[in-house]
Image (cartoon, rainbow, N blue to C red; front, side):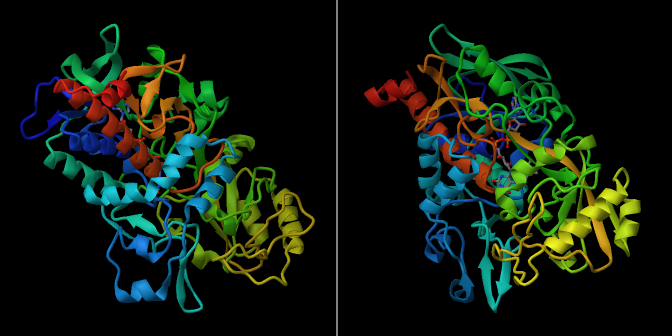
Length: 516
Ligand SMILES: Cc1cc2nc3c(=O)[nH]c(=O)nc-3n(C[C@H](O)[C@H](O)[C@H](O)COP(=O)(O)OP(=O)(O)OC[C@H]3O[C@@H](n4cnc5c(N)ncnc54)[C@H](O)[C@@H]3O)c2cc1C
């Protein structure tokens, strides 16, 4: 199926594989260089858009206060004056990225990501994306003034689906051909360079010839065989939070022609997720399986024991690694346990239908009702936990309040509240994988893929989840979309410029070098 008023038959200057955020940004940037662009999307139109379509739509970028926020959306005078917009300076962004990746993020890639993130957001707005203040999550009125915590004050109108729709609309206006149900299967070479892509279509295998190809078709999170192979035993049974179409095709195609793997191939973003969620994400209820309020809980396993410091950080610095901790527990499940005092602070989806929620008027009753949990073990854990809390420290969920525990393992560092007020509630979770970190090595400032000898592969570029080297072990929330935008734009610009120069016979030394 083709989505274009007058689909062109090719060849194209640039073929972009994928139709998520990174691919759309690459395609739009390539068009702005004067390139004729086609996009190949494995999914049918109603499931298209990849993980970007499932994203909550918060984005992390460097900014220096309200003046930078006003470059992204219109604010009322009250919003300008009465809200503490705080900042996420480049230094703070670096600190977060380096800290959560255990100082393994690639220096060149992370410098580009951080220093170009605000400009990328402004560019995204120019491409039709709409931002509003992120009052929904991690924002609260404290002492009469609204604050943001977690350094993510912007939200995409309509979340990920809104972003994909906005950019798809712009792609349509700019004449980009989008081929749905068109799964790229291999790269075409002419002996020297990449000259196109072979794809599986309803009419069989078809060749899409192009001067440059941008691979932006996601990681391998939806492929249980690759998950087991690269992430390890047990990962086959993780639930997939997003698209079922990201099975590692782009990575395989690139590795097949000698591209260099890069980054944390055993690493992934994985969260606590509704235990009985479907195998893949559900676009009609995208946030229903989120269980991000765990810093206010104790998380216990089948033995009734705690296994992480739930409150060591705001959730957006730990949620992406705690899914793996849940997967390690017996039978790959845990319960998040809350009492009535913190219930009003839980994210709204805890109140949805299709949530595995257990409610009880006493801890003993809750222990009996939590299927598969050692009741005595759980009650002992709660007794010890309650007794260990520094109750003299005031609770404040808008800062790391230091209201932690003393003398128990693991400790809980912040937001510890005595579990004493019925009704008690327990939510069953398992591990939901979001995306994988392993990717390809590139020339950082062009996105051109290099081979295992670190030589540029002529005509081949990549971005988004396929780019290796940015994330290791963990991830600061809101960085996936920004990374896709920054590096998608870079890859599309470089591929577009190189293809147009070649088409027009204007191969400047720079463009020759960029594509050589
Ligand atoms: C539930 C959820 C919530 C999230 N929330 C946020 C958030 O709030 N903020 C944030 O920054 N990040 C968030 N993320 C992460 C973010 O969505 C990803 O990091 C980002 O969308 C990746 O973009 P991408 O373009 O690289 O990949 P994708 O958006 O996954 O796009 C990959 C594309 O490639 C296509 N494709 C795959 N194989 C082929 C093939 N062989 N041929 C053709 N096409 C192919 C897919 O169909 C898809 O269109 C979230 C992710 C999930 C799953």
